[in-house]
Length: 162
Image (cartoon, rainbow, N blue to C red; front, side):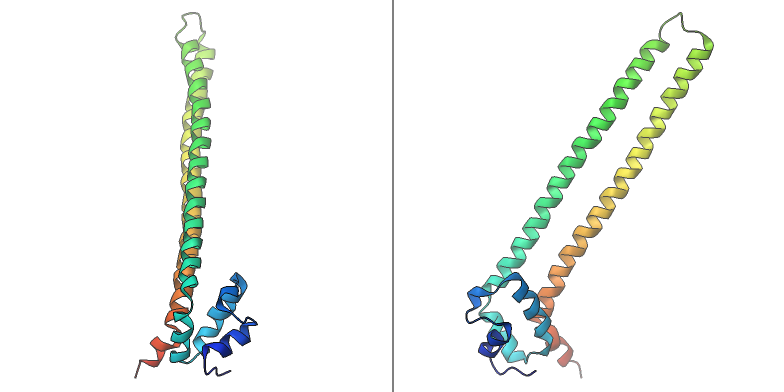
């Protein structure tokens, strides 16, 4: 549909005032942007300083979630490693005793090796987790930027090509 002005866009969104623009309306508006004439698109965007605020708020929320996730992850990791450090200290204390038979020594050394392997496994698992989280956060940020680009540029960039 062709819109000749920002008021027609508001009507299509079912609002009578840009202050009533909800998150759902923003998504609907972004979807409409490529179909709007360049001048109508610019007229709408001039009336939407809230769009930038919404995007900044979304990015701030993502950042806070990421920081909270990292802090929680660090605490979990530290608790996990602390438990194995305590187990290692206990095993080493037993190995330092003179009355430990060779079979028990081998068993205790085997336990130490398994604890080291567990540290390596946990480290790799944690790196995979952080990588997945960063990928999701990056995709979220990229989506916000793309949506903004569509809202601001949309068809305009395509129309400039000869």
